[in-house]
Length: 188
Image 1 (cartoon, rainbow, N blue to C red):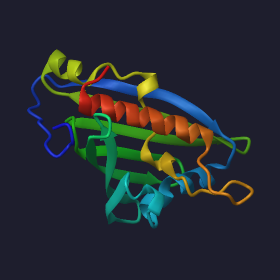
Image 2 (image 1 turned 135 degrees about the vertical axis):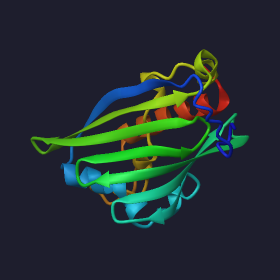
Image 3 (image 1 turned 120 degrees about the vertical axis):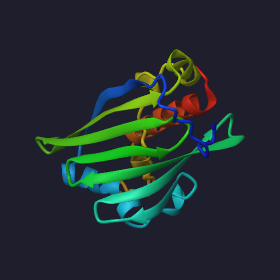
């Protein structure tokens, strides 16, 4: 269960907690931000992301992808199988197919204001077995949410052409990893 290879979904005592909402301003046009998010899914996945993402099936506006996150101090790898849907250039949605919990739905919405992009994140994390299921995953909050793998695009160049990961992406990535570890490992 911790690695996501087995999902127990009895439907009994299902509780869904909100993830987010939170947002971030990005100093780039909405089309550019969308392309950076979609590139590893709709195009060729960068080698730098090979240990974190594997696209199993690509379509024009939807993919089936596995996301990998180290848990238990790196001793185990949690895998989530998710559909990722793209509504160019304003929305990217993730729906869990298989993973450590029975339900996760996440959405990134992009809006443009004066040449900058506002990225909004929201979603829900569902557990079974009522309060017991929620106790296993802890209390996800703002500090443990986000960092969805589209923000792991390390090969995106800055103005000098040197690959780097933007600071806001690092923060989002660390929050996503913390949430996944909490879900898979039951830490608080």
